[in-house]
Amino acid sequence: MPHLIAISGPSGSGKTTWISQFLKDQSTPQFYVCPGLGEISVDLARIGYRFPWVQVVTEAQLKAVLADLPEQATVYFEWGFHLDLGSPFLAGLGCERVAVLPPDLTESDWHTWADQVVVGNAVAAPANGRLPEIWCTPLTGQVFDPPSLDALLIELTGGAYGQVCRMKGIFEMPNGHAFYVDFVEGLPGMEYTELNIPPWLEGRPRRFSGIEVVGWELEREAIAQTLLDSCLSDAALTQYHQHYQALDPTVDSLEEALLV
Amino acid sequence: MKLAVISCIHGNYEALNAVLSDIDAHKADQIYCLGDLVGYGPQPNAVVELVRSLDIPTCQGCWDEDIVEGLNACDCSYPSQLAEKRGHLAHEWTNQAIHPEVREYLASLPMTLRQDNLCFVHGSPNSQHEYLLPTMDGFAALERVLAAEADVLFCGHTHIPYLRELENGTLSVKVQQPGQSETQHQFTAPLKRIINAGSVGEPRHGRPNATYVLYDTDSTQVTLREVPYDYQKTCAAIIEQGLPPIFAWRLARGMEFAERAEDAGHVCER
Image 1: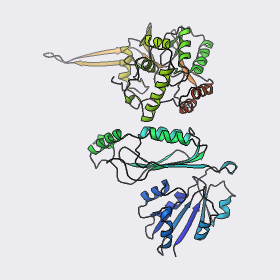
Image 2 (image 1 turned 180 degrees about the vertical axis):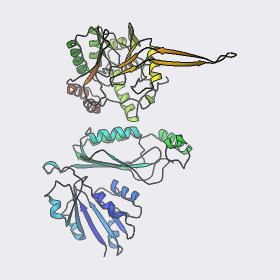
Image 3 (image 1 turned 60 degrees about the horizontal axis):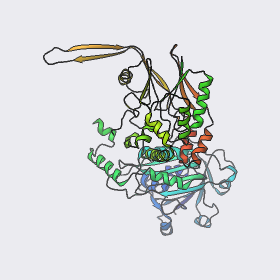
Image 4 (image 1 turned 90 degrees about the horizontal axis):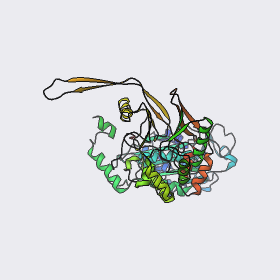
């Protein structure tokens, strides 16, 4: 029998981190589903990039995949905080229910719903039950000017465009590499992880990148404009690519190349 | 004689007013201004009018120059594409807002000012655009002070105040002329100082407070002053005047509107 597990909890509590520890196992077929954020999302793409052996399932594929699961399969449903725990779809799956919750949260709908509670990150519970909003946008094809992206992320997570409790994104860099960036309000710093995917040094990248922002009173237009202002033009991107292509392809970064 | 040295006001009238009150309370005999009266901030005309009305000797900053001559700095003046776009927006706004007589005044400002063994510049004696950072190579720093033919060089432009002492600088020069044996010359420079006045209207030290410097010519004592002011008024004026709201957010956090270029020693080729 395939094993179906639904994982829920507040934004930033560590749902994806909890799931990731099991996705390292390649001995049985693994599936990852993250509904509610459109056909492709930052989490779906990141899991796909990080664990290429895991089948990431889009909403469009879900019905067909569930109908034809291998016997040994494990399916992880990451059930975002914005989705209804009482959803008939979820109830119909008959899955094991895991809630990843901050240590200070002792009573909630997640407690009532879950078969198992896992202690996650010490993120703040939404004040007065006021759930945050989610804003996400694909950035596929866009490549960022790195110092502009730095400034933008500092401003965004610092509250310049509304109160942000969570931000995650996949961003393409001019050297062809892509980074996953993760911010959780209340946890120290911002996590930058270089994705283990081939450098893209020919034209605009035709692979997913995007951003997801969770918070209150988000100034969506201003965020979108600042993102656009931080992206490289075709001419600038071509110049960067020519520069990196001219470097020794066995050398990873400009700094290392200059040291050769 | 007690001098007060102010710099980088950037159209922030509230900050300038607070600093002038602080200077008054410290009974300074003379005020010098190191330029950048305009740019980014919402009250460029009021700032210039106040500085003029007090007859404060002022040298020209890079923003003052750009308002007079047009924005012609190369893009490497900015640390990022985003900062460049914002800088251009601020320039366009200021260029529209500025009164003709204010522009004339900015055009008349000298590059350097002097008083005895003191020299006052915006960036460095070489250029309004050059940053004299506290981490600058000691030889280069000493060269800048010697080029100014001064013992104390006052500068701004970096928006972070500091005092740097260049003690007993010794330069060794080897000269090889055709047909002659190599000769070595040594020059010893006495104590030289670089004093950066920080920024009145656009601080970059992580707090919104204005900074300036007091200097006693008799005791040579340097006092870096940090002055709180009602920065919320300036933030409100930024929004009211239609400048980008992100300028207000950054000002309130002492983050500066557009931080300095990565290669701070770079001077634009115009």
